[in-house]
Amino acid sequence: MVAVGPGEDFSAAAVRLRTYKEPVEIEAILEWPSGERRAQRFSLPPPDGFHWHNLPTAPGATTLILRHVDGGFSRLAGLRLDAAAVTNWPWDRGVTVTPTPSEDIDETVIRFDSADLVPAECEGAGVLDDSGGMIAVAVRCGRPNEPGDAR
Image (cartoon, rainbow, N blue to C red; front, side, top):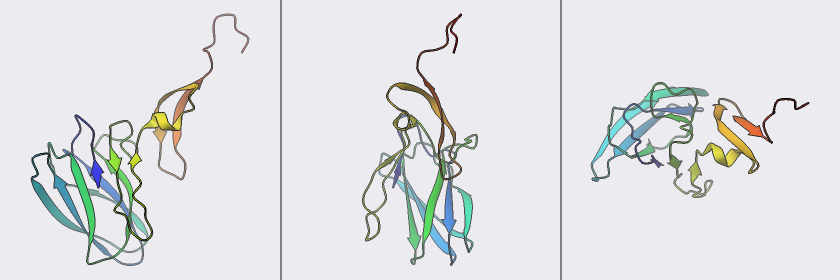
């Protein structure tokens, strides 16, 4: 389940999913605070690839549930709330992802807060890149250089 923070919604969202050996059919369920739900099914091609899929326009929707139809396996590899996003994940927008617990997955809540990636003595300026196995964050530590400072 993906939940967005205050002031955010799924107006122009897309999900990035990785497929493996077999094609997978996904059902995306968008939910509004009123309890209204809308679902859309889509298929992901095989095998071993990352695919962006645009979700239906859903202004005001605050929850997204992704589930496999008739089994299969895929991995959530990105979420964009708008087309202008340059990272794979919606950093600093109050988004949380809660996987459904299973034999292989515990119910860990994942937050995309760049401040969690910065040491306490430093100041962060957001995520620059999250496209690989590491996350690049803009960080400033220590005191700024002052005129005459020999640093």
